[in-house]
Length: 151
Image (cartoon, rainbow, N blue to C red; front, side, top):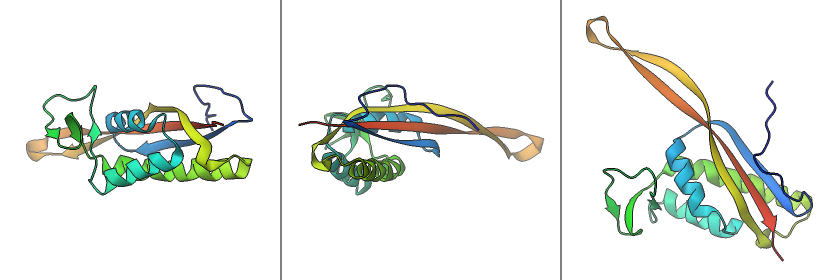
């Protein structure tokens, strides 16, 4: 069994952690969505993710943005990564429950670290006509979020 570690270590008295491991979702949209919710409180981040799920708010694309149309809710190119938002909403619920278990004030917990890392690739092949085959790869993603209680 592999052992998982977080990429940063902060004060364990005032911080709370949560992670997703080997999730099948888009890495690039995960990076952009985490950039959007970093620095926000848990309640604000949940509200943003629910707006993304309902397609009321687009995620601005900063790095991966070639040939992407502009959206009215952001100034520039954007998309609505619903699958990523649903998985991150579950992660924030877990973070909130961990904060309650530790005895921290959930309203004062801010997301200070949010990172996505590429996991393993699941390799598969799609059979095509005339004896050919097309490779099909599914990139798994690891996500880690750390919240800190701010007084």
